[in-house]
Length: 77
Image (cartoon, rainbow, N blue to C red):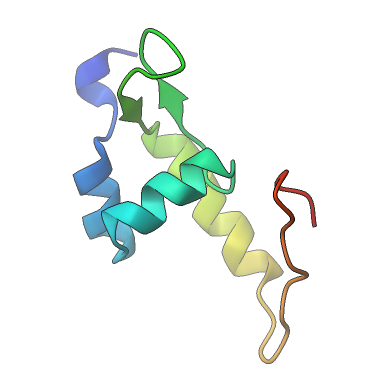
């Protein structure tokens, strides 16, 4: 895989219909799969297949009227 095959944040925001702030917070909370290039403060990128799998899992787990448990500051439910 090359970096040209990775998705940039604005592409994932458009794909999911979410704001950049939501996406960066979800990445920081480890709610959405992502990678950092170079180091812990490097640019955030997304692997297309991982985003698709994440969406598939979310669709499978969703139930009408069901609320997920709150996530604590460590990302645990």
